[in-house]
Length: 445
Image (cartoon, rainbow, N blue to C red; front, side, top):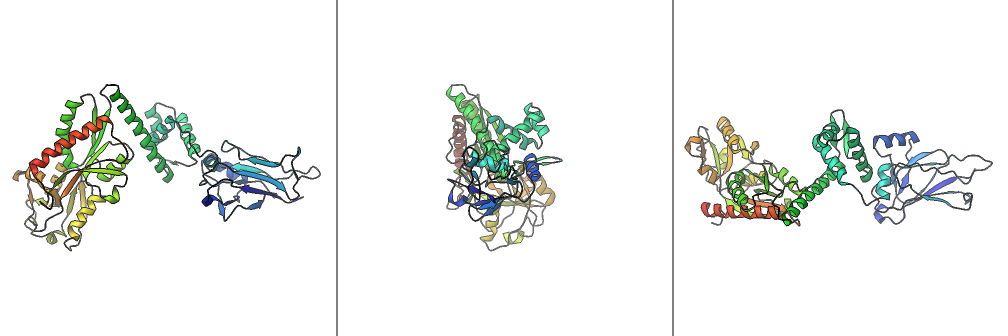
């Protein structure tokens, strides 16, 4: 029997994706199991398009997921160049539907012998990515995967959406076939997003948020004041800016709801990027952190060091005397706030103490400080309002600390809805009032 070979040609693909595929060494059953489990078959990349022998036994073949073009052809031709009956070359494209079996009988059979050459197909993950690079995902699919991720299980998500588990499971599988990726890891305790799932979910949440923004904007254009503005604010902004800003906004746009959260600053920026927040008010985001966001400075205020009135280090005169203390922070103790805290010590040549406690609640933080004799950097205007009965005092350190800059952060390249823009104007107005009351606290003042 003539030796049969298959030439896999990756036609029209990007140069970086030109590579051959070596068949998995597992039996066909392994491919069928991978089809059921949602895991792709094993594939190895060769330096260039290559030929390999298919004459010995059937086996699965996987395709490159990274290829950007949909042309993948499998050509069967025996060593003598024999054609199929009818004079047609045994050349066929990979089936359109992922997971379909492509069965080819060799045209080189002799004496009626059946050549055991078959191609069992391309696994669903790779086939879908190659044949359909442009996704056609439905909005119900987006809703399904976001609900599953939020609920942590198919059962809870189905209950929240009012669907059956089987219907929701089918939708999730359709999304995984559509994207060519396993989005969730199934465990005995529920589902966990995979690394690829986290990336897809981020985009899915953005799409959901954009649809909500569209509804709000359409309502405004129709003259019906409805919809919502979603805001995340740090402790200082939540206490000194938002109350008056929300009151003013309610008089200007009475029919729009406002949702306020007090996320840690890093989490708030993540939600902003995903479109779950319209506005974030908090510490100024440094340039390294703000490539896809824009900020507008609202306030610059003095920062002081505070502790319990009964603490043994309450009379310390230098930051160097406080490096051994139990340090706390109001707000997020990671990312940009943490870097600014560390800079306060490094600029004076001091070792950086460890932040042991972080809290978004001002009242909770002060109570813990009284109990633990903790030390904390604190906005001076808030300390001036506490009074001696609070049991909190300012430590008279000689070093001048870096001021706190409060900014209003929005997504770069994305316009706010009319209602959100109105709210931003109210925030700007309130911030201007506070600047006049507190004075200019910048270092040059």
